[in-house]
Length: 443
Image (tube, rainbow, N blue to C red):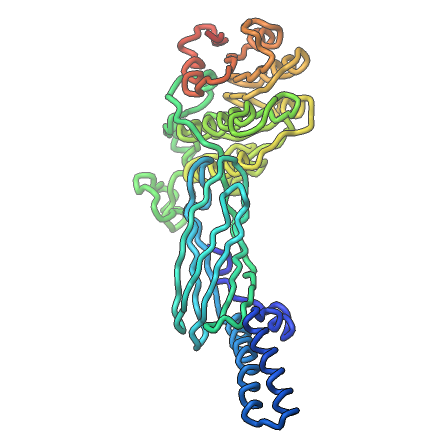
């Protein structure tokens, strides 16, 4: 829905602007009326003067009616859904309401839509009674991810006689977010799971002794079995035991966006494959209960340092408990607009990862030279497990060229991505149970 409720029509210029809306028929009637009036004055024919006044006044009355009507029409736009995967359709509904006491004439609607979403939709509404409304709908589809504005809606008013047409634009617009497509990934065991819990398992940690209990006030929904009666008697109000929060497994999805690391463009390019892979892995790990974040080669993180939903203390990781859906939305929104960076190094990402134990790291990398492979290799030192999907256009079929060898020697599970490879198949190969030494080599 358009923010702020219905969008009311606003004035666009004065009377001169309204007169400019006269059609060819309206101008002809006005010119004929003026000519008839001049002839009636010259020839002394009062009947001809009446005809001239009728011809001249009719288009002016139509202009006055439309000029007043243009302030009394409102519109509302609804997107379903407002966030849609690439190559999928979204439905847009337009509700036009006549809030005046007079019926409208012919209404012609045109919504502004970027060319990548398809042609501009146009609709014709014959008549809208006072207080009535009309609803029209159209569909949009994009093969390219991104954020696309819809609107503002253009409304063309016309009188029944075809004397005048006025075009105006509403003020508000909406944004359709086209996010990357995601693939369903099988459940596998990867390095780094031992540092916390995944698979949405919430383990209850044993409490300390009775003397170490830190009580807090009772909140609606608390389990009555947690009531601490000694503190309740002491403070005179219902108190419950404060349970220690379990440590959650973390996952960082690293996306290489360096322009020099990828070749080609379009939905089937290697970079788009990497973006789709990052989105799929991020959602998969969130579903398994991991605290997940997205990190790019520039060092930027999503969620940011404050985490999802403004919850502090998680070091930029999101996805705890009820905010998993919000974290997923933040990650998809970020990946919808992510673009190539002009940097040539992965060191900013390394600076972020060297801050502490990062749990599992899943990286989607482009072409690597020996220097950048060494930087990526050092990232492994602060992680519980590391899996790298390398999209290297220089690969000539040899699986042991220097950058990949450096990654494997550093402890990374390396999977070389070739054109046509499916992420789900590669994800199965990353299963640490299939690679005893945890350095999974490509087939």
